[in-house]
Length: 386
Image (cartoon, rainbow, N blue to C red; front, side, top):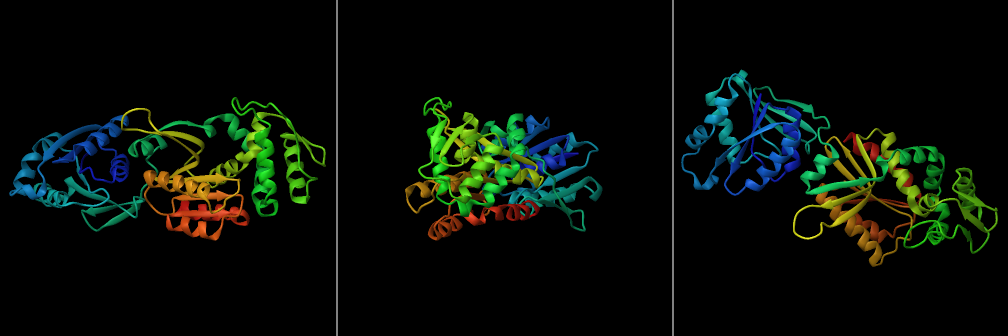
């Protein structure tokens, strides 16, 4: 089949619909002044081996003979289609040229030669508008993380979870990780102590283990003692059951200093069978001149062509500038990667002030803090099914 697409401002929907249909050739209708979006879509489709053609239309309000102009522009499209079926993809929303195109093609082709498809429900389903009756089907995951990020003008540089050692280590200490997540509220300020000691054990420049022996300011109370005993059983450190801690590796320090929360998020998404799950992701934003800005994401989930970004924190979450910057970073990244509310999550091992929770909610960020961290799993299950 051949497909006609009018590139829109919703490049993700444009790409998802074309990849779902997988035409022999995709024709991009370039309306005056919209060539940049068409060029980007052409590059993305070329990566998937889909042949691309173009035809140009004037601005809708500048044209007096819309049907005649379309018939002339569609000449090469119809000739190239031959006996193949022709599909008009309406994308996220139909503009006036798309509606006129639908009318023209209906006059030129029979029902068996022509279909009209449109994405609905935020790109999660595809509707066949014509020929009737209307049918709606779920659209599978057709976008890879590279596809998704490319549409958002970003490039995936590396992902810690792509390393086999990450998955092996995370699964081996799953029991400890989930125990820490469940005990966040009871641990409270002791988490800050662990963060400090683990960070202090590393060289600030090389991040190599330089001072493995550390001391608690006072004997560990029950919640902290339970956590340290679990870390000792997992081979991360030695604990004398009083105040002395000896870290066994730099990797152990990074886990104790907050890496466990990142692993909790990764394990949760992976066990719920999310289609693409990346932890410790580094990306760059493309465009502009000079050095491309970089961002790190603790967790990035792509499922059924929707993206979720998760920020993981085990340090104190007050109501000052530091917390505001964390929320701003998460909100701005999620907005660039999705623009939909409820697609950004803050996982905080420490309690977040109610004022900050309300501010986050207003920014479309969902917060799971302290005793509510374990609720992330149920929420994510619903998000994946949505």
